[in-house]
Image (tube, rainbow, N blue to C red; front, side, top):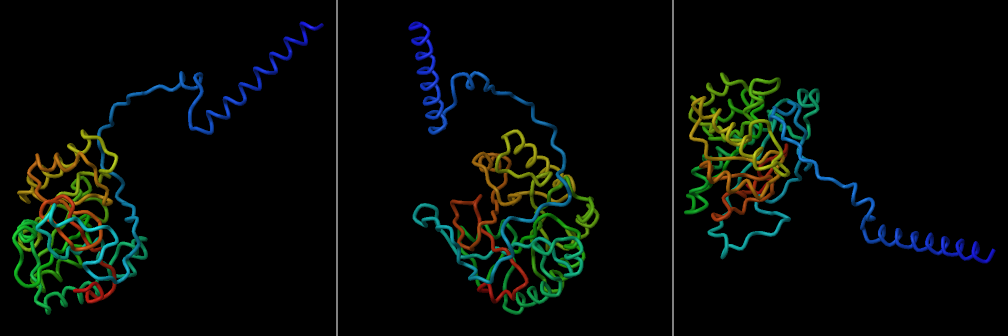
Length: 302
């Protein structure tokens, strides 16, 4: 009888010790030795890239409140390290279309009304702004610009650029840059190659790299990054739109691997969605842009 009591007592003690250890593992974020054995690393081959859905999610940031064109909540780079640094505004647009169309397509958050856009372009022309190409912008950051200079950028090559934005650029003789996800060209709501070629003939618009499928670069593998950027660059240049030397990050997400890959491919500038207009010559793959909404451009400090 005494032996049975001793065995029961030992079992009870072991159970208590087990409970205490499990609690300790859970609290410290560890896993038990038994659970650890079941954890395995599975290497899955990357799928063949395909264009992402044509209904591209809106950027995470809401439409901007009118703000100073040079203001930014993110710390500014040290000009002694990354300079020369200059204030050169880069304006970022997505859709340009009537409010009713934007509402019907659920694109209000990334749309500027076409009548507002017309007044914004007229304002820039009346104020004597010079709209730069990306290469001119890059040179301006390094060496300075004369007078009022600006870079106008449009992401995604939507068809409404052809219908509503491009005529206003022609009317006001303003240059612009369109960042093209080439795998989506010709899809519903996007420009086709014929429209892009027609715009190119004006000499006012530069077409630049926005990956092949509007791929988020943030967590992409090096293989995927290379495929996306090189495919878009090749397709643009095959359509007579080269040399392609500029890039914009889809969704604004960067990746440490991207800079060296772009440099290797001859891309000399890249644009983020980080707000502000403080640009530094030694950060050519981190240029800032100001997202424009339906407020007058004077509200953004222009």
